Each structure stands twice: as C-alpha cells, then as structure tokens.
Image (tube, rainbow, N blue to C red; front, side, top):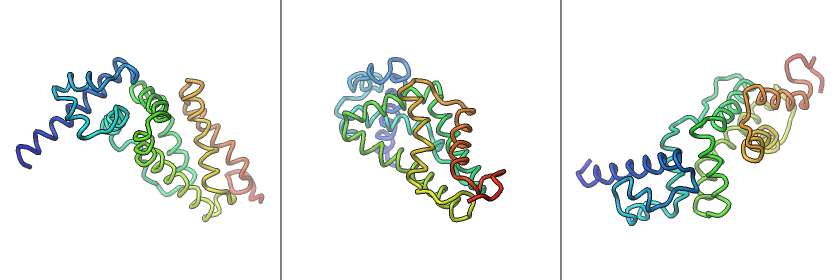
Amino acid sequence: MTAVHRRSEQARQAILQAAFDICQQKGYAGLTIEGVASRAGVGKQTIYRWWSSKGTVVLDAFLDALGPTIDVPPAGDHLADLRRSLHSTADLLSHPRYGPMLADLVGALQHDEALAADFQQRVYEPIRRQTTERVERACAAGVIRHIDANLAADLLFGPLWFRALLMRQPPSTDYVDEVIDALLRGLAGSTPGAGGRE
C-alpha cells in the first residue's frame, strides 16, 4: 500500500469513527458533515468525495462498527436457523449502541434517495434473501407447509420492526420466540408436536 493510499484509508477510518461517535453522542439529527469533518480532521470536500450524503456516511460508519454481525451462517437445522436469524435481528434492534442508530437510519432513508438505495442493497436485501432462502429450504424439506417465502419474511420480521420503530420497544428474545411459534402453528402439520397434520 502506497503512502497516499495509507493516508486515504486513515482519513476514511477517521471519518467513519467521527460519524459513529457523533451519532452516539448527539443522535443522527445532531450530526452534520461539518461536525464530522472537524472531528476527523479533514475537509468537507474529502467527505463528499467518498459519500453523497450524511446518511451514506452514517450507514458506512454503522456497518463498519457492526462488522459481520448481520450475517448468520446456517447450522443445518431449518427452523433453528430461522430462529437464530430473528434473534440476531432482535439483538441488533435492542442493542443500546446500534439499535437507535439503525432506527435513525431507517427514518432518514425516507428522505434520502442515496441512503435508501444503499440501505436496500447492503442491509435489507441480504437479510431478506437469507430469510427467504431458509423458508424455501424448510418448505422443500417438509419441515413446514408451503408458504410464499416473501410473505413468511414479512410475517416474521414485520412485528420486530414495528415494535422497534413505531412502538420504540425493542423486541425481546421471548417476543421473537412467540412470533416464530405463532407462525409455525399457522403452518400446521410439520412443526414439532403437530402430529403431521396437513
């Protein structure tokens, strides 16, 4: 890595850290590009060279701090994998550092097209795809009756996001299990204890 590349990477990391810290201290509404630039020790033009809006800066800061937490590798048990995916999302939504930041990002993307596109590609679609694939595998294995995988994803994740974003009550582990169990009871037959009814 050349000296120029090292300086660029150092500046990028300083910007992301500054954005994350300001969000933790002042919230998304309290963050400005000027404030990030000042704390990171860079010019505003450096930030705008890499990001098109403050929302896209914050999303990068969020994902950089979060690391690979969003991804939940399958363990082989279809229902357990679905449960783990929802638990992972609930843990994120209820996390004292990441939950409020994520909620702010979801609110901001309503008015920031660049952020909305970035969020869709990097956060929403991977989680959605992971869930629908697991539902499809569970259906194919006969673990649950057939259901449209996208509908199942709506039914599973919708209550979690509703609680976190509208009720401002991060979903608990017990609540996640209740949501999953309610859906599985609705998909009668293939769930444990259902006696094989169709």
